Image (cartoon, rainbow over all chains, first blue to last red; front, side):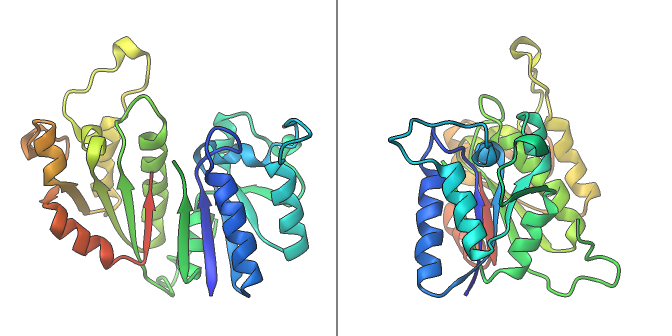
Length: 119
Length: 129
């Protein structure tokens, strides 16, 4: 199955991104295709490579980055939500790209299922 | 952004955007409205739902001067210009907040929770915030 993912929260205050990450790992293990992961609202903070969590905690920015590169997953950060929050190309971790909201709608059109992770 | 409207869309799906939160205090309402206005350009079957505190987003006569935030309630009036005509408001949520259809900035279809549930079940993509 082709699955689209929407993440609406950042990597720390809420569990949405953690849950989505685990969902994606499990879906890939079952042989599903992840069509795209779209980051909206505070979800755009998941791409910030300047983020430095404590070293004994998980680092979702690098986990997403690694997962995307190993599995060729399209990680898209909403440009409008990103600009508001000071997220620009120079702070975007490898494996993520900034693009428009149309990418979310297109994921909804192309994927068999759209799964939303938020608060 | 991909353009789907040059020769008509290849696929038309039912997209529903669900607003559950009050208009101010968090950014969800404003950013959801931004999604809907973009989504409208894709020639999909779009509907917008207001439930729980989300019904307050449509309240008439909002005055945000004292909280220093932009009053974006007039933008809901643009939904009609974008051909977004399926706007549903849950009756129970209005009742619980002492509101009626007359208190809202745009014409809507008021649905009981049971009926709204049926409309929701018919959707291909449900995006809530």
